[in-house]
Length: 159
Image (tube, rainbow, N blue to C red; front, side, top):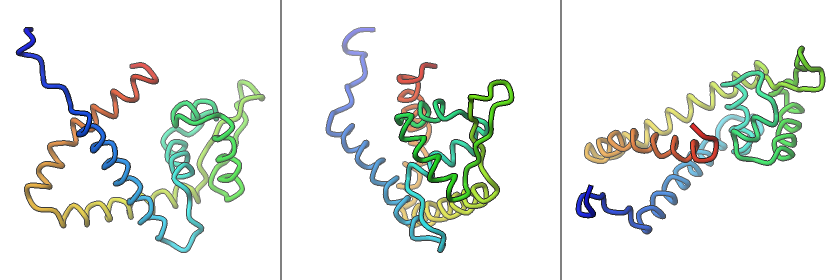
């Protein structure tokens, strides 16, 4: 491949804009969802941990910390908070009594289901307000955004 065939570099300003927009969208979704049901609101990191534990019941605290890119003591604090609120259960690993595995409670599964339904409805409602061209652009961007997320993940965790 010659220099003429190489793709143009992604401009720094566009990369910065993309990162800012993605963070802003996530922040606004969380803010809107916090204003939901009467239950005490959960912080973003608490929701992230609950979603991870629900997706991977039996995960260890250390593995959850790696997956969430948080310090182990930060995840331990989140586990304590969520356990006190009745959302996480600590189970002893039958093969090694020193190891704790995390599991969601029924209350957590119910709360997450409600949260995910509200999130889906919120995003669907906002996307419906966009023009046809904007919706098509978002749909076309989803595969590239998934690749971006996978690349970011693999760079830290490996393939």
